[in-house]
Image (tube, rainbow, N blue to C red; front, side):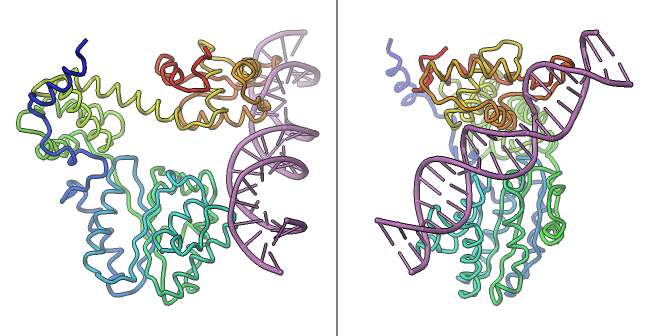
Length: 396
DNA sequence: CCTCCACTGGAAACCTAGGCTC
DNA sequence: GAGCCTAGGTTTCCAGTGGAGG
């Protein structure tokens, strides 16, 4: 097998399909954001007072994933930064899901204020309140003008409550002559429900909704990007239509559509094709699904993996008691500590939230109440991921 | 209509890893 | 270094419960 030679030969000889791969990267911010004029202007309007040195209203942005919330926000902020050219304006961006936790959200925020560098916010050990105080003091005494973007704010609230938001929305005069304006970005339209009404009224002084893109809009966005990314005639309008249709049938998610097109391009390139065809897109779509699952599993703690694996041993679902026995045996077999049933039940809830497993409470009358548990992901994809895992490699 | 199963899920206590102050 | 603090994960305890079978 001359597999490697073949790959290298293709790479050398084959005309690359991409001229500018960057244009299809998720973090790429195009010069203009099509179909988002209204939102761009609205955000600019709200934040404009900063240029006169006064505090803008807090702002709350809603919309499903891939509707351009983050892109539009970053776009406006970069313009703002260029326009303001003063050093006491700080534009902070924290994705609360990636930060994962109240403390780390604050710590990430503190980095933008250069607090981290001065060793005022250690990695752990401080009370949340103390961190908030230090951040407030820093803003106040350095007269900083701060815009804090909290991306995926619904995640923060759902898991950790609104304490941080409460502290920041109420900090008002305590920060003078500096200020802190919040821009919350939420994927979940219902996230307001669990919020303290005082936090809500302060946070959503201004609100903006990002509707999903229609299939037509997606098509136009993809056409535009494809023009930049590929050589001419690599991405036919049929191929683009198909990407737009697949992504559009989900929830008008532009990020997914763009990822799909990029990966389809990569597949075509690897195959040595001169254009993207239907099967490239099919395979790209499968790969994205597989990667999603793979990534989700990989980053799971050991116990969660063990429980997930135990679930996968049952075809057609199981219940808590049965699963606990299987899980205990598995732990013994691979030499992992066995948790209590109560805890397992809790972790099952986490796995449900991640969409890896479905666990719903059912009553079986005289035969008690339990959770009906089912695997939501392909078993083969799961086994493949686990076979590469050091702890679970041998387990079946 | 009542019973009673096999759990659920809340609450509190406990443990660990880390930082703080003195 | 002792004795304090917190966050986050876990265990322990237990009251509560939907509904099939009686």
